Image (cartoon, rainbow, N blue to C red):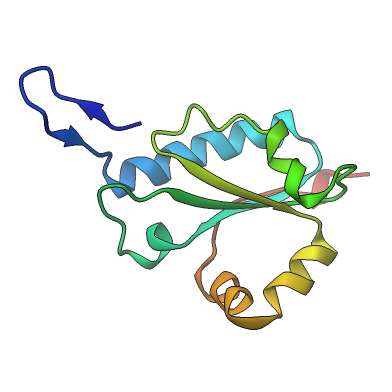
Amino acid sequence: MPVRSLTSSVLVWPRRDDVVAALKHWAGRAVHLHPEVVRIGYFGSCARGDWSVGSDLDVVAIVDRAPVRVAERSLGWDTATLPVPVDLLVYTPDEWAAVSSRGRFGATLTSETVWVTERDRRHEA
């Protein structure tokens, strides 16, 4: 999260590269904590390169299975270690295909998402 300098009222916001590095580290851990993960990526201002002070991090996770509704899925994911606020979307592959193929939001997801981790399926039985 942004921190206030001890000697001034200026907020220091993390650099974009630091946020992406933190996300990659977090995603690596998430794959181990959530074995249903297929892949994790980010989109929005961070992916477009127009990230600025106050920006959040838009993250999408694709999972094999999800026993709860879309609106409740992100509650089981701890994003507190990331240095900025996170908006996390969790979809199954079928939901991802449906969402990413419709309308403006779908076009944004398709064109902007930068994948940071993907499960290695070669070692699965």
